[in-house]
Length: 293
Image 1 (cartoon, rainbow, N blue to C red):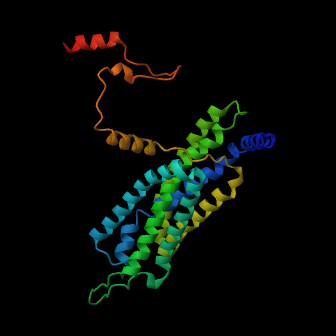
Image 2: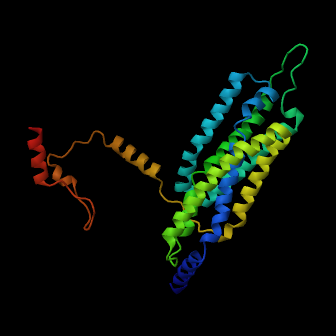
Image 3: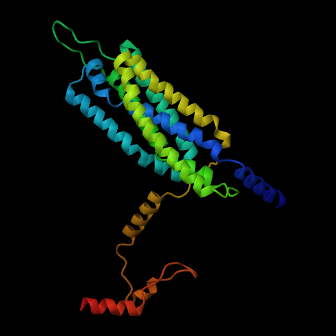
């Protein structure tokens, strides 16, 4: 019994010694580099698909729109997995690795000649479309980048807040938390600005190999910076997700759909002592009856 209590006390002591401002640069850098890498690929992607994969304008635009939609949808799944099963640290780690693999595969499509179809014949103007294997290679890179965004974006802000809200010995905890939110959103805005200017400029003037190599290198820095500080983080365990609660309520409501309501609904309101919930009073019901009349 004493050994268990000592273990719990030691775990709590170790927990209090972790987190704090020292972890903020690693978390913000992870999110910032991911945004620069992913947003920097969007503006010129239609041109890349048209020129290197011989796609028409419509097909290239649709491919790009589907990829963008998947990237914006995946954070919903990432948030659910983080809250219910994996926890924020593991979700961000897996997301960083996935984005790194995705940007690396995309860089390989520009580096390896056989990863894309040959150029169109300038005399006959005939173009050979990409093979199924080449399409699979390209779409795999898009999918991994979307999965990575789904792991990083919904968890970074909350994970940073975990590092500060658990610092009980910090009297300025609320002010520090507000400062973190400010720096987080400022870094996100600057990251998008850099992505849409510097990364696009590199792609236009230095070619696809370097233009896609820069995002891959940034994601390597992003993953390394986040994982190198693993021992410093406060790592909250996964809890019951809000989506899981909604699903359980919907399932139970469907199963009980044939149950009859009691004649007197006053028995429906039973709360524990000290609960903040209040049951409807007879006076309030009388007012409602008069209002209906």
